[in-house]
Length: 460
Ligand code: NAI
Image 1: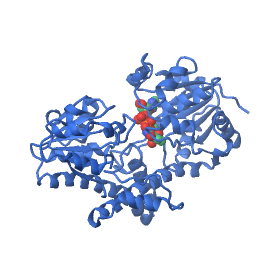
Image 2: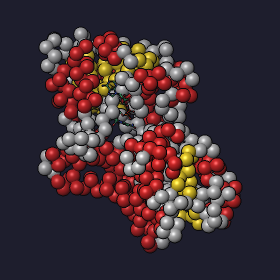
Image 3: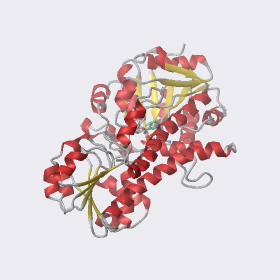
Image 4: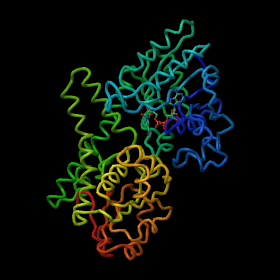
């Protein structure tokens, strides 16, 4: 069996960085090099201060500190690293297409294809190519066709190895995964990759399937996860009309072992780079096979999520006497979930955009997201000018400053630290009546009402 001594990972993002750090830590005899076209990102990964890596994940800095410069490297020397490695992970972004056929729905595979062409161009020895990015079912076929038509006699094996880590718990998920999934055509290539995981993952958690099942399982997993959130959020709206309490309903149904207790938390809606993109991709694939019932079924999960974000923002405006024009709304949280600095598709962006259209001014505090990221998230929507966004949105590095003189607080991310704030002090410094819109059901309702807040949350 082929022995892997060098691994190359193309794409130093939220998946490539943490995944390769853990593979390097658990396989001290393998040299792992993560390459990227983005020089700034690579420089940040090489930052002497591991607390300033481009990605924040609990536990990540420690692992990078232990392995970087020993058997973990970050580099922009893509061609050289590809050719030196026996195994190449493709871990580049696969965003929703913003142009042409499938615009707004299909996955944009241009970065993946560029990687395949790059590998085909520079490889002089046989390689195992691993799809780590989330890809539409049957993408491996396209990659294979590019790799097999180079005119050289270099042999390529293609494996699908989708990543199931969740941001915010990436390191924990990688070290102790529910399962590792490897899809492939040839057993020997599958076993080479399985051996790398076997350094720390029990064999019975390493699943082997055909390539297409593996590719489709990733899209399906994300569709099911997102569907649970939209399902409980749909019930939350009904709870608000009927005096049922969504937390009580979630607990009651979650104790049914067929349903299970996890991922039943009502909220302002899911965000993140994956759920929406992967469902839209699934919907697009289903439509491309003329399976319109399948497509409609899954599309509803994202449509409801849009409704939930919009409904939260509407509720703020309605409660504040039908106008927020000239009012100051304090946002706690901008990241799409706690324990990450990732803001892609964060509910906060859409709620902010809606309130800005209503001429509110917004002051924001997030423990990990820098001000320039928040501004660029809003500018990316193209709803108003850069200077208008800068004028209407102020970012603070201290939560008490951010909430001072506000008419309302909106909680958009479930950061633990928000619970331990001195809410009495916050109350005293706010305009009265002081409103809290808790988009994450994070705070204790009774306590907030006792302090004097007008408190509303999701589904209660
Ligand atoms: P990301 O955007 O954080 O990182 C991708 C990196 O690839 C970027 O730094 C980009 O500069 C680089 N890149 C793009 N084209 C390149 C090329 N031709 N050569 C070299 N570098 C190139 O993306 P992220 O979040 O790491 O996602 C990567 C893939 O993993 C996506 O397919 C995503 O769906 C999937 N995924 C993401 C998860 C997440 O939690 N973020 C979880 C599981 C899967």
